[in-house]
Image (cartoon, rainbow, N blue to C red; front, side):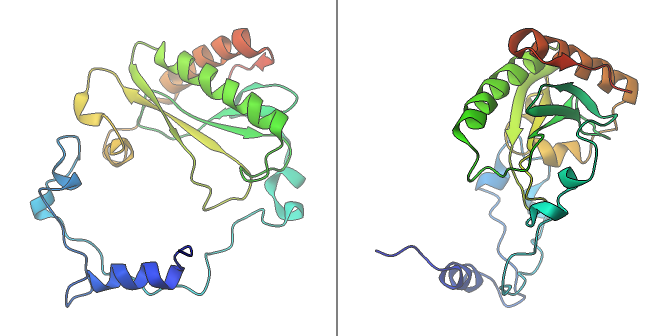
Length: 209
């Protein structure tokens, strides 16, 4: 069997829409999960848009146009770095800590050199462990999206401790509703993580500006 085409996938989704072009909301499915932040019975899905000719272009598809070709490798948001990677705060945030890890040189996940891939795995473990040592963090969640930029960037989200409604994949939906975290609290949490990563992985912890 050949891999399915984008047209075939889209046609199957479109066939499931109603007369108004909307997909149905199943309150007994995943949207009925106790951690989903909204009441499924009061929701409706936006109308399905048309199939695009191609995915939107991402910044950095041409490495010469990527931010890394002209911007300084370290910024005021950087909390840890070594010769190959930097860890930065993602602000503003409503979570106890939100971080971004990326290589200093231009790479995306497909085609990442083996040595960098191995080090990335070690960094994911180190950053996650440091985040989960924070008293306000119950779990470190990891996200890789990459639809806006072709330069590899991994997101780390600190799921608030002892708030079971915020577990799992709906965390980002909840985070859009939670009050913004004070910047000084976020920077203090991030500095703690950076110090732990420096102990594990070497490199330099930087006090965020």
